[in-house]
Length: 103
DNA sequence: CAAATGACGTAGC
DNA sequence: TGCTACGCCATTT
Picture 1 (cartoon, rainbow, N blue to C red):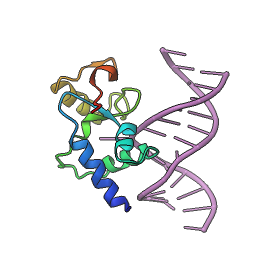
Picture 2 (tube, rainbow, N blue to C red):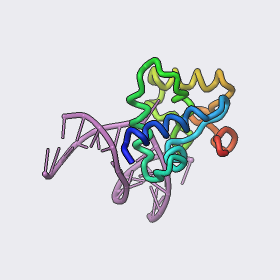
Picture 3 (cartoon, rainbow, N blue to C red):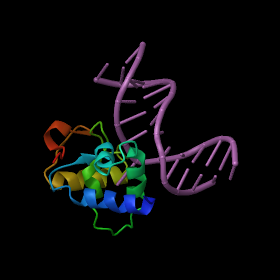
Picture 4 (cartoon, rainbow, N blue to C red):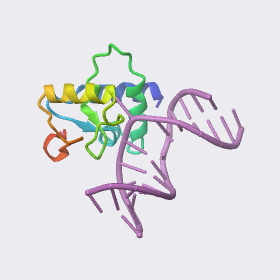
């Protein structure tokens, strides 16, 4: 299985996350059939074209945090989009119990 | 080709 | 609850 195929599968899975929900890198990796590739999921998102319509903002880390330096511009952007979809943060964290997407 | 890197995760203390 | 170590693995140096 080529990494390009994995990349496609990962993108499809992320695209299936409904608005108002979030998922984690690790969970997505598992769904793609590669449980140990959480980091790979991250690198896929990192290399997305700027104008891509992939809902990258619905992906956070397993601790419910946005994986960007706290207060950075990217952090702020992701937080704003999430809140506009109804995903509220408690301080700097998202309540996974409440918003995590688990089909 | 060895070593470092990174939008991560888990275990242990 | 927080911090440190380690594991992980495709990519990049």
